[in-house]
Image (cartoon, rainbow, N blue to C red; front, side, top):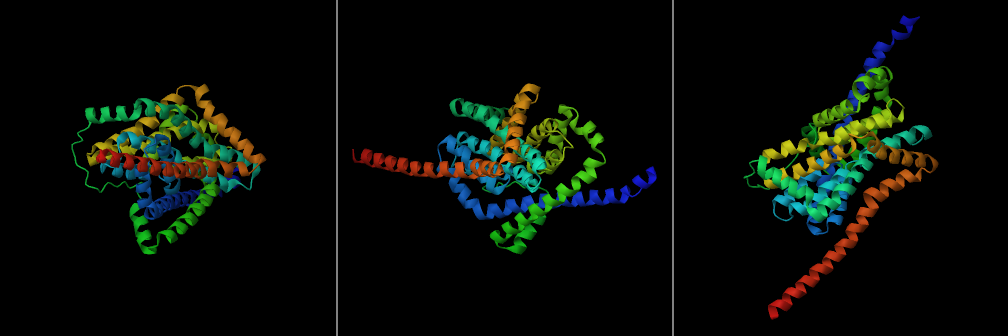
Length: 389
């Protein structure tokens, strides 16, 4: 009897593993395609946005909005580095943009949760897992943003570290780029083949949802259902090891978007609890700061200092939440509350995404743009008056 039950599982399990690997590679490729398509559509717009604001609060939302559109905090950080290194933006002005980028990159895991929207109880846990990454970064911003605005905490610390530990005497050559995933050569080949950025964007969106469907269907069969006890023991059982695994896997693929999105189906199907998944997500935030090591190759103050800011932001967030279970449970409880509310009214999830990542940032940027124009007009009139005198 036992052999008849376990015998057929071998080929089926191997098939599930192969489909899961294919789905993961497809997901990574689709995210990179989405990144490239949005960069080609918005690179000039992004640069003008970065230069437009002197208000750190608006800078925070500019970074958030651009990363929500481009789907990669590392890519947006690289774009900010280019603007800073060209002399159009100071390091202090760029720090809020990097903070916003850390929040904006979490939208993908939240969108993954909506693939479970037709299953009420599953969707509740999926959305809680999806927004947990958002909430962690938002709470970290609430703590560090005032320290940066009033004391220059992150920018001053990053400048000190750069001056002390790095030989940053190089000159910016105007060609700073950062390849987010190892799929970039294939991504560029497909992008050049399709040609039109808008068609590429549509193709990338279709690929994202196709890969999410594959992952959500087969990841549990291949890794969760058969080996759930082993996975819990080796990855999620102890917070510290879960943290290290999250950092390692994210550093390997160079994208926290990928690793945190994979956690959503596991939590949604009750294979991993939200409490145990949270240290893995915190670790993923550290893993994505491998940008710091790569940026140092460019030997510019701007590249190194901004990369150090990115690392400091995520490391301080980890140090605040990881050591103490009572503090670590705060984001979990907030995420659980949003998940519960989403089952009562499905619009809660959609409203959260639209308000947090698009409507509020866009409105603040729009109204601030008019304010900046008025201030520039006042400044011009003042200069003319002084010249006449």
